[in-house]
Length: 507
Image 1 (cartoon, rainbow, N blue to C red):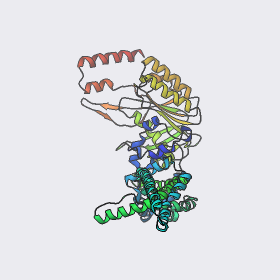
Image 2 (image 1 turned 30 degrees about the vertical axis):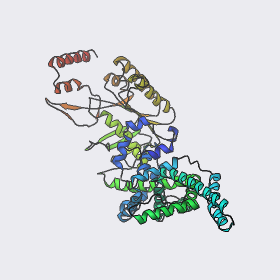
Image 3 (image 1 turned 180 degrees about the horizontal axis):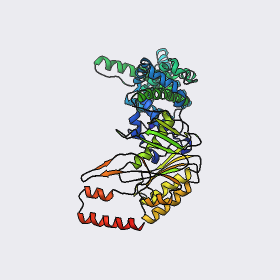
Image 4 (image 1 turned 120 degrees about the vertical axis):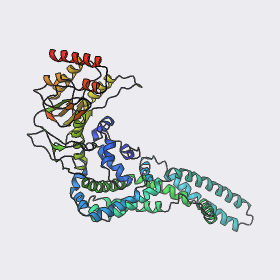
């Protein structure tokens, strides 16, 4: 995903305690791809705001405006009109509005006062020169003031080039917000947007006067440009307007951000109405009862085409899931986490029914890579990632996703650590979804966890996965069968199979 789409979330700089998902969890849940999949926004602002919402592990305000989403689904003409209004800020340049919000504007009132004084000097010296008996001195002063104004003018102009794209887009954002606020259904979503837009009227007038560039396609256009430059140098009109505008932007930053979020939020609601219409089925999340921890019926992963739906019901125990390679273990535990996040953010789940406590935070340990730069091995990175999960889970209730933990160490210690860790988590109120290849772990924890598995059929030339979740434990692996399909030497296959059977009989 383009970094511009992520810019607003980066600008907000929210902490984990504020709900911001850690980068590792975003990577585990494929947030970038998820955002692209569900994105039906009509503007760059909406796209940035949608990504920001997906990075916040909290119930969003979208849930409070369910009636408006349904209204947009029913009233196609309103939805079309809204999309057209939002489409005015869908050029790539609109992504740069965030740059203005993030900019540390260094203009001061003293500098503005200097510009306002200097703008009158050429006129004063011109009048003096016309009235003086000996115009030499006022003429020299006039030239000096004009040269000084030229310096100030082009200094401001050089600064302005950094905002060549963002300033016009900020103006369009304010125009778009005005149009959206005139629609009663949208105006009611934000009780303060009217006052906010009124406070920004002065800024909007300033931005309207900007002329950031003229296409010089003819001699008359070039002549107009020269005349405009001479007037701007003489009066410092453009320089003063730039300084006033940026001081206003600095002073009204919160209001601009408010408008940004208003427009982005309306776009997300409109996008959600399109998105729901595109789905074969979906449901709103429901708070679970005291008798159950989690219930999912016909749940799917949004990023998997032709995904096989599955059911899951957890009452008192968390889940350990086994299965062979590529059978669907990791995808399924991701599915639960992704649907919990979508339920919080968009009140929309890829299931026929999904019940869970929406106040549960999400934390995952799925992708782990060694860090060559810092000299950290794969196992050490696993240790650090799991420790973070332990630390954050000390505050509140969590859905914890663990995928084949401690792959970077030997079998005996891996089983021992997994057993101790998963056993310790049973003392908490967390929901644990853990996948493993080690059946020894399921034997040790069969009284503490519900056990599920995925399996497949292996023919002579191919494997067939049904991707259906089953109750129990997968006792058959497929690693050696895969080697056979890829035509490894028969001697290797035979030796591996013989050792596997010997090990299995000793268990």
